[in-house]
Length: 171
Image 1 (tube, rainbow, N blue to C red):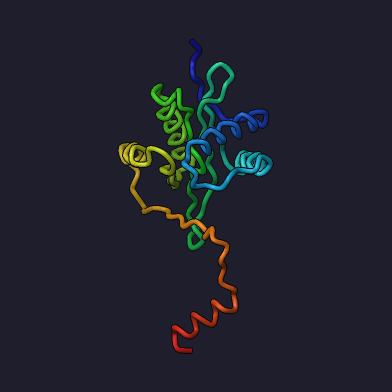
Image 2 (spheres, one colour):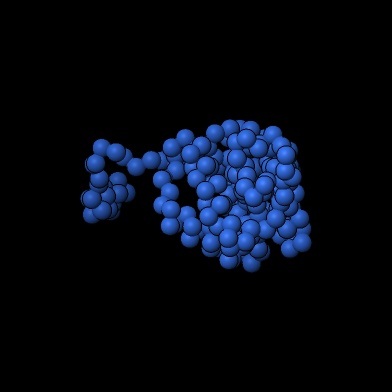
């Protein structure tokens, strides 16, 4: 049985990380749009070039990853590390991989004197993920909500919408 290694991803790991993210998509209960392979590869490559990707590897297989961007709120000069994704393959969730990735993330943040921001509690087990983050000392900042588009094909024309809004305001 091989040892689990946490390391910075290299360009040759991009495809492995993308495959891992497809596993995340398969678990998310249909709330996110279907990924486009080229766009996923571009996204992962962009994070690698402009941010950080840490991987958990066992015997050459990527079993977990965290993608981290440098982020600044539009109204502030303060830089944060933003967690774009954090995912561990199903068969390795009990083996300390999450803990090891979080330790590496915290080390990166401490070296850069940067707070960490991001949400990882979508998909299955959202309450468990929220609890795990609170146990790590993170503060809950609110949630993200999704309203799916109407599937009946009825759309309000833009001009009609403007007229309706003006009528409601009394313009």
